[in-house]
Image (cartoon, rainbow over all chains, first blue to last red):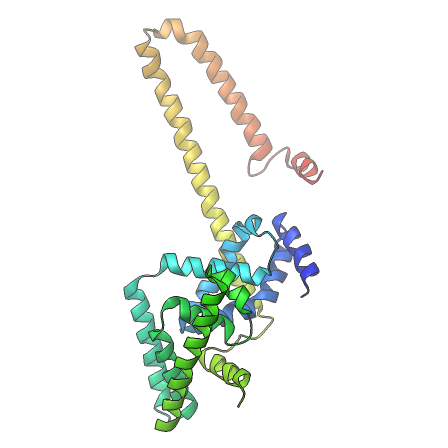
Length: 180
Length: 111
């Protein structure tokens, strides 16, 4: 979807057009959900968070000034919501669930699953800003500048987070590959 | 393997991008939006009712404190009651669930 079409649909959605908002959801959901899946680690939680972010976006659409793409705005909403809503216990539980799920699947001896597990563990050990920056930029879905806007961090910090985080993940992947 | 390929591989391992379009996801979002709107309306209605009944309840102690007796206040209270009934009837006609003026409201809403 090009920027002009997005701006047109945003204008319609602001006036209460749910069909236009539905098209915006369709267009933006892959990038937003991919970011949250990589960031949260648990697909069910990530999709739940993504739905909440889209629903909140509907109510705060007036605050979107159009200076960036809508998906950047939605990811910002999702990240801020996650920050407010997180609880240490629930986060640990969901992480444990994800490990348990992966370990169950790992018993089949699938090397890809071992890599997934190693990466997820390395990801969970990163500070949350670094983890979010990686989740945004690794899949080439968002530029560093967009990630900086979403996370409300300076551009240099985001670049540094991505470089360092990538090195940690590559190390985890290398260890995993050697072990496998 | 290039850095870009490496990044894409890691991103894929951490979480795949979902298929698109995904009507189920859109449906869930719409359901959440509707639920939030319902909750907001319910809150607003509850607050309005609390304010209204509090105001009605306050009238009598205030009048009593000012030394106004029932006989003195009766004309004022009767007028206030008549006005309240008129306001209620108008509100129901314009905004009620089966509003008599719904068509006019829709017309002016479009304009």
